Image (cartoon, rainbow, N blue to C red; front, top):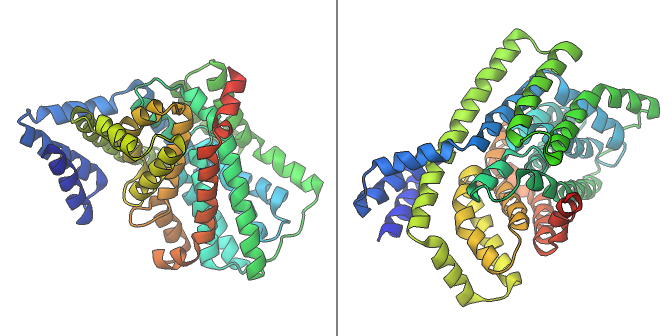
Length: 426
């Protein structure tokens, strides 16, 4: 009965367009009332979900990414990417993907990536004769690379949802190879589509020019090394690295690039506060929802149900992937991680699957969901920047989604892609 109330209220509210955070919170409150528990339990769980110390890293990484967009770092990373791969067929599409990989390494946010890189690249691609749907589809699919490379704040959320038992440093390390693999798959797809549509390649600017652009972009690239190297070596924690990222971004944009104005600083600060408030509200409400599922023994029931279907880890992983891909079509990333981790982590452990490996699979699944309607937040941002409808983008997005799903299957069934690098550092 209680589970029907929990999922029924959540689904009903979601179908009528209620924001996800309120869907989770109201469903949790309704279930608690049906169970006869005091309503304050829900608010205690919301507060507990937002009060984890490691959560401090999320607003600071958001803040650092916002300052980088406004302070010129994104533009210089894009220019350097143009020098490296612009001469390939469909050059600006290749530039878009490589620039997203670079920028993802300093922002950790797919939405920030789609907004920053898309805001610069989509208009340029349109001017050079690229169709809007191609420009948008390249942008939004490349943006999910940011979820796999450090400093992805969704990896921090997964670590917290797993009870803090999984190292953030290991997660940062585990996502690098899958992230680069996804970038390579998308670049190949962009090349094939560009050849079919007859898109041109850009002129190679020369090694001297590329070297100059590298020097200009170096301060932004160094931040990737500072964050990853510091966390991986144990010099500072993920929370401390996020604070260092903010200070570093401020110093670079003010004193090196000299593009950060007072108005831009205030706007970046207010933007980070607004984004943080939304993210933490979703996380808090999802924590209450997840606590209720644990209280109602959903994980144990899931393990029993999956054992009844198969004892083969390959089949179990395939089934989990299908469920996560379906959930990703109507659930945003943060609540999906917080809700699904307590359900599926005991399952994968029971079948001998490494929790670190599963974390990368979960994050990649949720990332693909960000590009599928009806709740595809990254797809919405890309379409808004490109000024096309969701329907127009979806007509031609399939090769790129196919490439992402192909990489998902590789990462799922070749654990070494996620575990090799972390094991190398141990």
